[in-house]
Length: 428
Image (tube, rainbow, N blue to C red; front, side, top):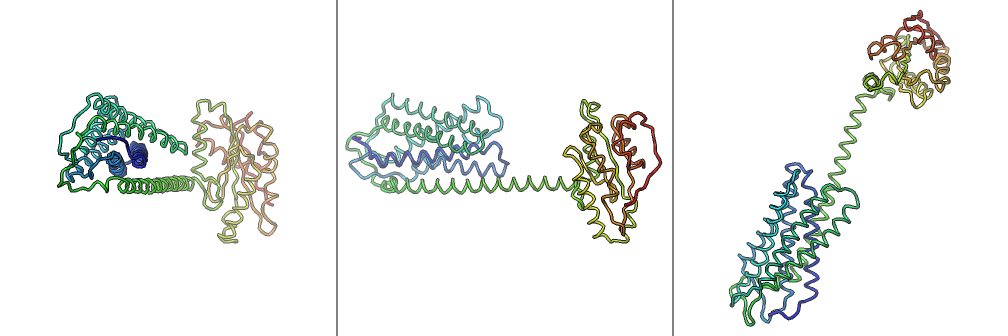
């Protein structure tokens, strides 16, 4: 009954197979990391699109085979062939989408998908209910089954491979893989048509309810449009989900930063300082990372608050913190410890690179405040590991009042860690 094929229909069948294969790869690659509810959505969509795509390719391919009589199909057998393709695709994607996949499960998924394709193909041909029984070519029959198994295995292996890929290059890899899979699917179909032939003069059953005119270009156009729309909607959904994940990550980061940030000055707060100290002390070679804590406290903070009010006082505090921040090198960690107090953590504090910074800190009473509103400072410092080896000891030692002029003179302090100088107040 076969002489030659209708080339436009052959091309249409291949395009449908490409989109079906691409849908299978696209959805299958997202099953591993999907949550339970989302996983069901991806699985259902993947099974429907892949199964429908392969089923459509089959019937469009059948229409590409010229017959001397109008082609028609039994509705129930055609529906069952579609269900077989969808079910087999769903089972295969469900198995391949597991986080852990061994050889037995992979083989099971491959055989499930191949069985669905074979059943769909030969049942779809039987759905014509020809007046004469078909004849089979055993060689081509075995070849078509082998192609179905190899194509299914390759498709699932590619799905599994693409599950660990991300980025713009993934789409290109998926498209190339879809072309290979489509060629295998079409190869199985047209080999199967050579394996199952009907005698010349055989005609479809007169009571078939599905006219063959709808199973060619119209079905191909409908399926291509459905797959294209589904893929576009899915891509948009994926982008939306990624945008939500990025927004959530940014919000989580922002909340985490707020927990370690002073709301008034924008500086790290007490918790951030303590965390930084713990991180340094937890290092394996912590004693090879000496540092100093410099304590600066506004002694007349309450007077300033009473005389200036919260808004004006907050402005002064912000100016102080910004001035201190500008004086510090990039390596120094400045934090607001309390309403009136600041701590500066200076790594490798005896290094000469900090000399200019120490000088400016010693002159802070000359730089901040006005004659009408002077700022009284209390200062202190501690050095690790000579002054103490714990966060509590270092902070308490740094809060012992000292002269502003002592800031940066850590060589003297290191020689006598127990040295305690009387408190010294400086007015601008």
